[in-house]
Length: 68
Image (cartoon, rainbow, N blue to C red; front, side, top):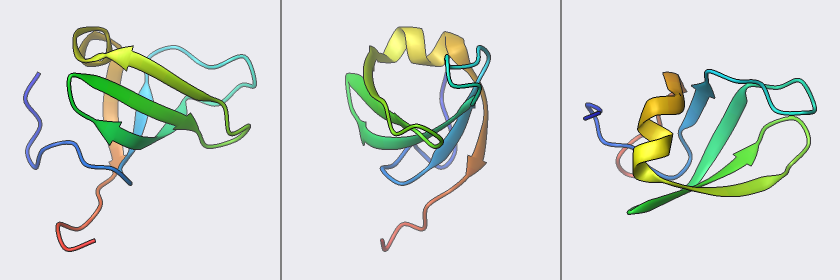
């Protein structure tokens, strides 16, 4: 899945499945071949590969500006 603008650290994304804490919102910490996400509610950090991330992504909730 190609995103326009590209995925950047600081973006907030919504995934299809909820985390155990009940949140489905994640903050992007790193975006490369793997994506590192941090749960907005509980702070849990996970790594998933780009393919799994693309299939689990529902929508991007917040986009970080390019200069940040």
